[in-house]
Image (cartoon, rainbow, N blue to C red; front, side, top):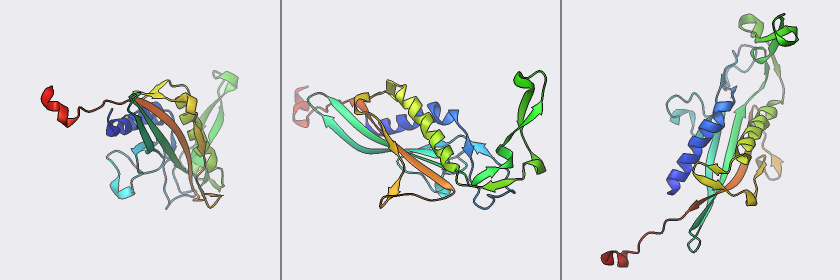
Length: 209
């Protein structure tokens, strides 16, 4: 399988199997207080780089929330015809605090289990805001979902998950300190995929075929 195909297939797998299962806050750096009408979107999946706002693909509202699949290293064993690809996933989300529009409020409902149903406030009722540092929870909820889908898979995007090499994950750091880009939150996950190697016919042999 070609490298371009491997990367594209992994991005498509993430979009279909991970991003479709979760919604996170859509960033609005100019309205991150009580005036922000909370909007949730599915994260986008990108290959290699997270694009800037001026380079977004169609139908992608923002670069974040997102997961970016980066090929960090590869190796080909020409005897075993085995290709190993080490991928790093970069997860990113935005959350400056608790907005009223994201809180589920109880409403008496005798027909519902427990006697209550729950709804999100809208309009003026939703215009409350408490700034906090709990956005890391969104980041790790996202990571937990990704880990669950990877760890439960035998094959990902046409590649075998190399379970014997394990999966690593953590927070981005700089000089030993965890990144602090509040209200943006980041973490990473690394794993290895295996595919076969198709050897090309040497040019000097082509005339004999």
